[in-house]
Length: 114
Length: 112
Picture 1 (cartoon, helix red, strand yellow):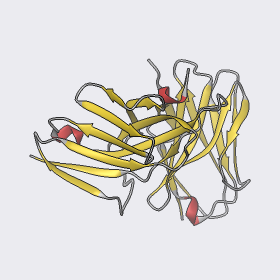
Picture 2 (cartoon, one colour; picture 1 turned 30 degrees about the vertical axis):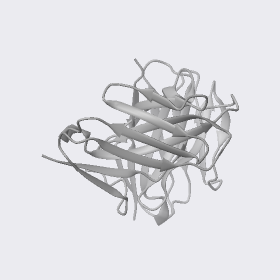
Picture 3 (tube, rainbow over the protein chains, first blue to last red; picture 1 turned 90 degrees about the vertical axis):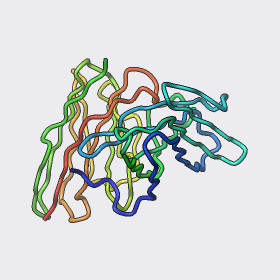
Picture 4 (cartoon, chains in turn yellow, purple; picture 1 turned 180 degrees about the horizontal axis):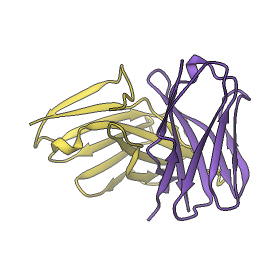
């Protein structure tokens, strides 16, 4: 499969446990924050997003938390499953209504042990 | 639902050559963005095309260029290839805002 990062930070969790993946961002003008999941040999897949006027958003088994004070974003995955094993990226985009440019974080590799 | 096809999936080129990659949105999404993914630099934005016009550009040298056709299909071209251009090139299509970007599987370019 594709190698998306040889030196990515890795989070190893036991199947059934909850996972928390963190991301720091730098642009205080960013409006949208998005989490992507990338499996080997595939492009990034949208998981969940949150707008800057929110601090929490929930999806199916996933929750994104946004702390604008410290410019921190986290993705929580409940009851982690082997299929969740992948590289996770946060991305941000500014509120300038001038396009769809995304700035990505470095990524975290999630490994789920059965 | 959005969908996108990138061709070719794999490509091997020699240093100094040029290459053209293609991205075809299945449902005619008007915005197409290109990204370069490498182990060292991660995912980096190259450029975005909207209605056949370049709307945003990342911090890449002029050897990297692109265009978009009236049917929303987009091509990117890299001239005078360097070894460091070896990467996975991804395109993303959107019909709305940035949180709706749908990525293709990418083209793996290897420069030897």
